[in-house]
Each structure stands twice: as C-alpha cells, then as structure tokens.
Length: 326
Image 1 (tube, rainbow, N blue to C red):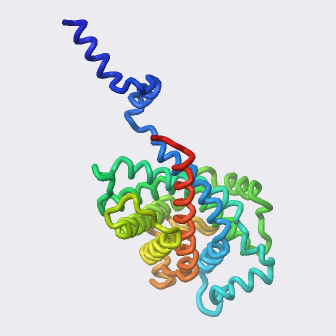
Image 2: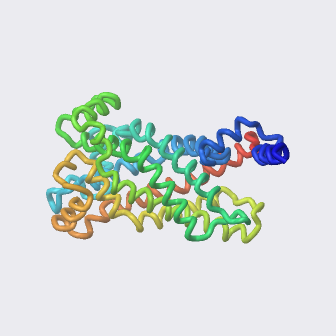
C-alpha cells in the first residue's frame, strides 16, 4: 500500500516524462513565475524596437521637452512655438543640436521597450481566457502593469537624466561635458534618490500611457481579425492602429507628462512633491500650462507608437519562425 502511494506521488511529481526535472524544479521553486519563452521574445524584440524607434523620433522629443521646460509667460518666454524652438536650436548648435540627449535616451529606450513588451507579454499570457483572448478590463490592466514596470525599472532614472541634460543646454555655460560626466555630476549632487525624482508622476504617466495604447491596439487587432486568429494584419494597418493609440494616450495624459517633466528638471527642488508641482503650475501658469508641448508630443507619439508596433510585430513574426518554442 505504501509503495503504491509512493509511486503515485512520484508519478504526480513528473507528469510529463519529456520535461526535464531541472525545468520542473525551477518552475516549482519560483511558484510558476519564470518568464515564458514568448515573454523572452518580447524582451529581445522590444529592446531592438526601442533602439531603432528613438533614433527616428528624437528631435520631436527634444522640442517637446524644451517647450515644457519654458516656464516663462508672454514676451519673456524663450520660445514662441515649435518652429521658433527648432530655429533657435539649429542657429545656436546646428542640426545635431536637436539630438542633444539622444545618447541618454538611447541607453534608456532599449531596456524601457524591452521591459514594456516583455512584461506585457507575460501579463497577457497569464490573463487570456481559454480562447486566447483578453477582456477589455484585462487589456487595460496588462497595459497598466507594463507601464508601471517600465517606469520603475527603466524610465524614471533615464528620463530624469535626459531632462537634466536638455535643461542644462539652457544654461549660459552648460556643465555636462558628456553622458558619463553628466551622470556623475547628477549622481554626486542628487544621489541615487535624485534619479528617481518624479517616480509617482512617471508611474502614472507610463501606466496610463501603456494602458491606453495596448488597449487600443489590441482592440483594433481583434476588430480587424474578426474572430480569425490566423488572419495576418498588414504592417501599414498595424501602424495606423499604433498612431491612433498614440493620439489617444497624448490627450489622455499630457497633464501628467508636464508635471513629470517639471519634477525631473533642474529646478525640481522648488516643488515639495508631485501634487505640489501640479498645484503650483495651476496657480502660476493656469490650466492651459498642463497642455504645453501637446502638438510636438502628438506628432512624436503618433509616429513613435506607429513605428514601435510595426517594428515589434515584424521582429515577433521573425522570431516565431526562427525561435521555435512549442
């Protein structure tokens, strides 16, 4: 009887004779939270996507950040608009001046995109129903989770560094001589905690960003496929879905983006916290200040999200052919 019971326990422990014991042990000791192969594909594809995308769209990010940091009003404002910002920058620093801070954002975009897509794939894998579909609520939650993960593990420190680099350009005598010198100065003056200024606002921004974007894109894909999971979506159509998702996210959370940018600028010390920053902006500059940089952000984000989803889908299709996991 005891031998029989022992044999049953042994059989239950190794249900699949073709699964290696080492894999079973890893799965059991981690509670089943090892990233799936699809999630690993998402991490690699996302990282490659992030590096390519930021090289294409960075000038619009530069202009958006400059306009958001321009806190003066009326005739005392440094820039009168998008064109004037581009004109002044090119006149003073040449065309390459529009790429100031690219290195910083490139270092951050690769892990940011990797974390975003990898975590979304993992959340999605754990949330789909028996037919492989996500409910509307779970689309939002998976996107929100992906955004929060990227805010904590990649976006906040790199965005803080990027904003300080761009803000440093506005000084009469810029202090940062390069990426590593600038990071060293920031870390020395602010400490590691200084790199996480605006974490709350960044989590709100990235969380709502990705919740809106993944919800729109996933919903559009479901609509296009119309129940046929094997139906392929042309890349230009994916790009259109991405552009729509980007526009929705811009109008949904630009006020959060403005607060985040102020909290990460060189004058962030004048704000007690994220809420105090929002209150001061409202009191001193009015509600319209929360939508500063909306137009350049809109053009950048629509292009950004469209390119991102097209490139990501292309990499995933390639990986599914050469990286067999089933």
